[in-house]
Length: 102
Image (cartoon, rainbow, N blue to C red; front, side):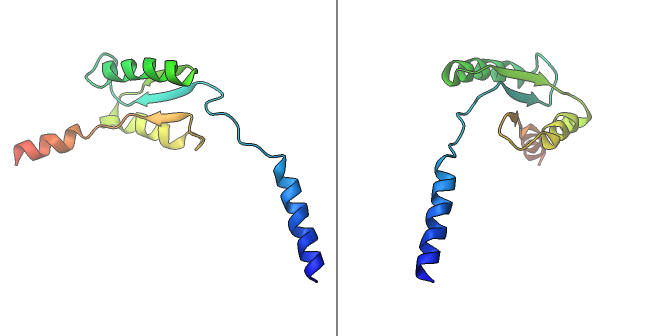
């Protein structure tokens, strides 16, 4: 019984030893900005994307998806595959505005 467990554990180990993690990123990264192009969030994100491209050695694409109070861009990011290649730029500007009005 013990020998069977050892053989099973060894076969699982050998089967998994050939698996290796892929390098990240292996393809372009998309950053969704849910605000209009040229806005106060878009400019800094483009500067950050340039630096990310240099450091990661992969293209970082900034995609503006404005509309419905940032819901269109946020929904696009939520529906994207959960693989780490789609990022969302979020802002808490509305929260700050509410605090200033209080």
